[in-house]
Structures are given as C-alpha cells and as structure tokens.
Image (cartoon, rainbow, N blue to C red; front, side, top):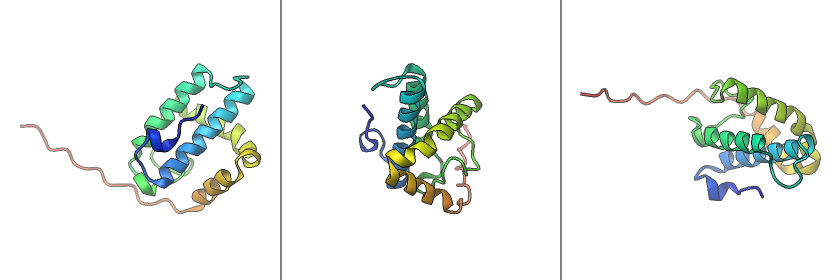
Length: 126
C-alpha cells in the first residue's frame, strides 16, 4: 500500500506531488514489469525508499525543478539509470491511470529551473 507523503515527509505541496508521482511510477513499473501484484518487489522497494530519501534532502526545497531538468545530480549513477528506466516505461502509461497527476508533472516540467541554492558554509572546527 502506498504511503501518503503527508505521513512520511514534512515538505511543500510541490515536493509532496513529486513524491506521489515517483511513487506511482515505481508502483506501475513494478506491477507490470516484475509481476508484483499488489506489493512492490525488493528492488523497487529499495528504489522507492532511495528516491524518498533523496527527495527529502533536495537542496531546492519548495522551488524544486523536476528531476529530469535538475542541474544537481543527487542520485547515484546506478539509481539514476534505474529511475530513468522506470520513468521511460511508466510515464506515458501513467497518463491513462493518473491523468491529473501526470498533467501537473508535465506542467511542473515546463517551469524554468531556478538558480542553484547557495550552500551554507560550515564553521571550521577549532
């Protein structure tokens, strides 16, 4: 059963929508590619958990661009490729199953990418 973003993340509506989108894509991909039935397989569960952790730590926060347009690569290369495969498969199919979510994601993708957030300088020890 998918977790709701409000119970897992204390974030903006934009970030919650991004989470709902990636979670729906992973669920669709797993169900149709791994014959998972109702539950995610171990590989897809790990990918979902990794995506959640990366999304929670996104330096853009509320101004987050879609991952495809983001200049900061926060996924490990292997996970990034896995997510690309999921999105290539599930993206077009999600339009029929979750049209409003998909259209909102496409609209988010059209927004300009904001300037990268500034890093806070850590105080030096001693």
